[in-house]
Image 1: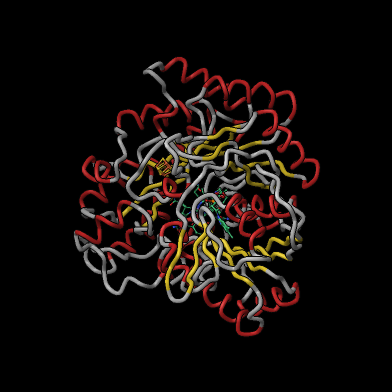
Image 2: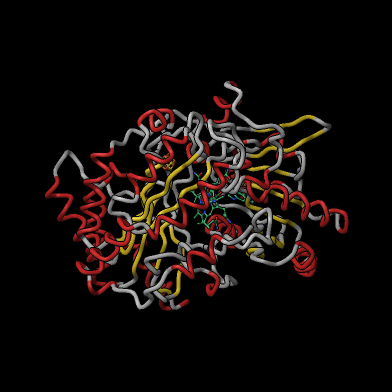
Length: 486
Ligand code: B12
Ligand code: SF4
């Protein structure tokens, strides 16, 4: 990263707003705002004063007071779609009291729709934020209308954006974690099997993704304008392990959730070197999301089996797979080329290795039908999956799916409320009756844990892996409390 000259030391308040509807109790599943922690690190190293804040369950008013008390020069907000309405409100209230505070936003929503977003904030930053943000901090003291890659704003009623993107290949700096409340981080929420009772933190081992799923925003973030595309940047395994060590020593962390978009299991050489360094230096457990096609390479089952045992031995506790649906038509539309046969085999191998297989599904995709939905559920409950997450499809800005959905007239008007970007509400038409999809959503996410097939799978897992046996035996209370929120 190039050296920046400090022209003015800014006080920067980095904010992750909470969900659109704070009173909704379903989501108490917070993780570190890694994006802001990385941005704070580069700003701090450049000489600025930084403070990272998550709204959690604070009211907007409490938060506004907190921001004003800090008295920042800059309010830097991360925006996924669900945060948009709240972020607009907080920023406009702050501006009414102190118009001098400069608002800068970035994140997946901003990258997907920079022009619309820029109507409500002073500056938008598209793609990876580190370099554009630092460049902007450098320019602001002399020039409020800079022409910088990745930076956009309205000027005299006209939107300006320099959309040139350069990948940030530097992931050497450690995130700023100074004022985070680690007691709020609990892994991936309630439900069987339980998460270990240890401190949780988030990390990145790599950045980028080699795929292009129809519904995903990630591709737009990791884009590169030059011809030399660097799809995935991996950190040096030694740096990863020393960050793990630091997390356990400084914050008493026992579990790391990697937030990588495409965790590099496919690079066996890299992974083996990670295992080696980790085994002799850190006992932290860890989890990540992976593609099904990253487990068995070149149809070599026995290599995959050995690899998974090594993965488990290195501390891997859980792997999340985006399975999405078992309808071949829907998978094709999502541009996800996975087959049920492969899914079954991979889940079995992961299960046998003693790693908890978690599956994520999308329901209500365009062309979803009752039959497809039920078929997916009925297959899912028989597979070697220990934790499920069914999410209602939301077409995020910047995705291929949104442009197709608009063209094919699938959106239910009005579709301008971002409060429903929580994957719990139906926002596009589908071949089900009104309200039916939401009912399926609740049913699928809770009742699956009481299915006979599921309970047999759970029992088999614990009989094979006695060391992972939980102390809680009755899940009904936990699951019911999660889903009683009407
Ligand atoms: C971990 C994670 C979570 C965690 C924690 C969320 C959190 N604290 O951010 C949990 C499990 C709670 C979660 C929940 C949800 N998530 Co989530 N999550 C992720 C995940 C896997 C990693 C996020 C991350 O840290 N990435 C690493 C950082 C470094 O990358 P980044 O966030 O993109 O940040 C870079 C740039 O975007 C930019 N940037 C970002 N913010 C800012 C701010 C400023 C000021 C600037 C200058 C730049 C900037 O610079 C950063 C550094 O390069 C992403 C997918 C992914 N792999 O990115 C999805 C993702 C962010 N989640 C998503 C969604 C939809 C959700 C849920 C609504 C889904 C649900 N119902 O289950 C909920 C919402 C609740 C919530 N509070 O977030 C979507 C967002 C899409 C959108 N447009 O809104 C994503 C992109 C997944 C996807 N591909 O669809 N999520
Ligand atoms: S869904 Fe996962 S695999 Fe597909 S493009 Fe997004 S991050 Fe990559």
